[in-house]
Amino acid sequence: NAGVTQTPKFQVLKTGQSMTLQCAQDMNHNSMYWYRQDPGMGLRLIYYSASEGTTDKGEVPNGYNVSRLNKREFSLRLESAAPSQTSVYFCASSLIGASTDTQYFGPGTRLTVL
Amino acid sequence: AQSVTQLGSHVSVSEGALVLLRCNYSSSVPPYLFWYVQYPNQGLQLLLKYTSAATLVKGINGFEAEFKKSETSFHLTKPSAHMSDAAEYFCAVSEISGANNLFFGTGTRLTVIP
Image 1 (cartoon, each protein chain N blue to C red):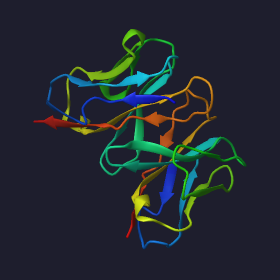
Image 2: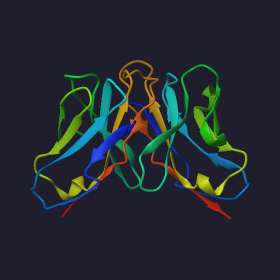
Image 3: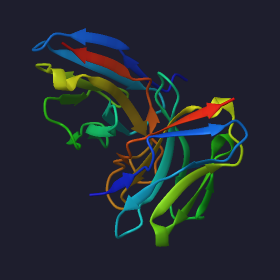
Image 4: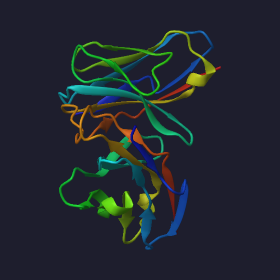
């Protein structure tokens, strides 16, 4: 049982390049999330997917797109990377998306945009 | 919008001493509250959560937190610090109604001195 997995672990991009961060969970969870973590700012929600086939914006969605490919997978795409998107990105999942649910986090992707 | 404030971005304690990490929330309606821990280069892991049952919540690794409505607080404590407790701790809040969207505090880095 791997839990939540993310690829890649590290990535360096040049300004304007695009890339997709991959996330998969094997816990049969309905809800999935993407966060970014910046020094001194905690984690901020980018997008979430309450269930397969639905996605919604979080607190900081600008510059990102997401795809809920199936129940297991939720990808985050940067179409034209900017230095302000340098951050650590975490994917998380929860069972049904209820307010009391525990979220389970992946190990993160450290992204640097030059 | 929900928010939490964590007082003290860095806390140092001696091994065996009491650990106290502070968290205050701002909401007219008591929310659900969570403490997560992040070890170096890892994702976040749930320590404990308050979901309006008992106000004193016990978590993993000997940690506990007490929900105090009158003080809008949810401070995390551990009677005796261990070297393995060195990590970053995040308080988070989710609304009682609505999706399982967490709003995180800015985190407190705990250092344990041998």
